[in-house]
Image (cartoon, rainbow, N blue to C red; front, side, top):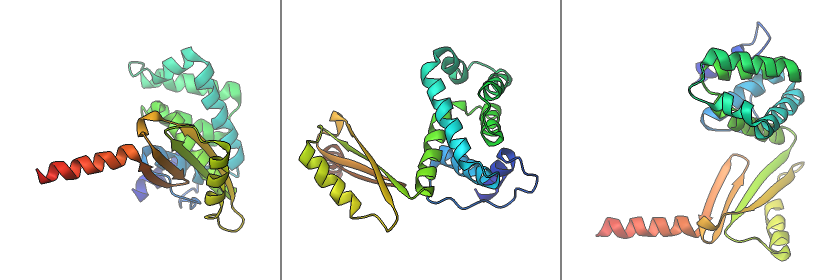
Amino acid sequence: MASHSLMLVRRLSTSQTAQAMVKTPIQVFGLEGRYASALYSAASKNKALDAVEKDLIGVQNLLKTDIPFREFVLNPIVQKDAKKVAVEAVAAKTKTSPSTTNLLILLAENGRLNKLDGVANAYRTLMAAHRGEVVCEVTTAKALDAAQVKELETTLKAFLKKGQVLKYSTRVDASILGGMVVTVGDKYVDMSTATKIKKYTEAIAATI
């Protein structure tokens, strides 16, 4: 895993001496997390952390608003070389930083452009932690009222360390039935009713 990450850093960095990984402020997981961590390391070496974040936000917006472009880069039938040419053109037009350009090319070459949005989100999570922000998402079955939001915010702030800033959002997902699912940085706590029911059902099935 470590050697793979170092290879990604060398591919993403414009420096010929890029060898060691720069430690990320928190861990991000999965394939997207590996690309994001390598990108963070490369951008750090190139002193382009903020520039890369701005680039990725722009690319994410492009994927949302430019339907033909999104369908092209996500189409599994389109050849990797064609996708590489397309992302190179986008990078040149939008004047992305070298680290961002290298990421787009690397994802195209590896057939991983479908992971771009996830990589961007993981990188933005790293940058939030880099700034001392604690990103939190709370999912509930029903929208919280003003009093519940205030109580939740007070509870979450109590877990912050000195110098940290809470940035949280809430969303509604009726499928969890009740309770809540909380994601704080790289930690995930599932307190939903749906998950509890699943566990109870599995426990009962195991005794039959």
